[in-house]
Length: 95
Image (cartoon, rainbow, N blue to C red; front, side, top):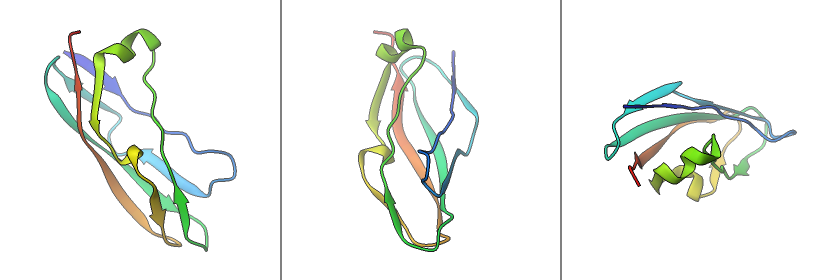
């Protein structure tokens, strides 16, 4: 079993609150898992943002297979809008 911990950072000046809904998920190699992030536009204007992801430590990155993710698309949030965004498909592999 592998424990995957989630975190989130927002670029300086970006008026979004962006947090993982769960701090960690336990998954067995070869299993797929579901995780969510919550984003909120804290400004008075619509803002479009794009997420990027990384895996640390670097030596662990080769074991993650991201199949589908909100981070592959732009997200537009209206003023004060809050949404839950799933990372619907990712898995830990043994290769």
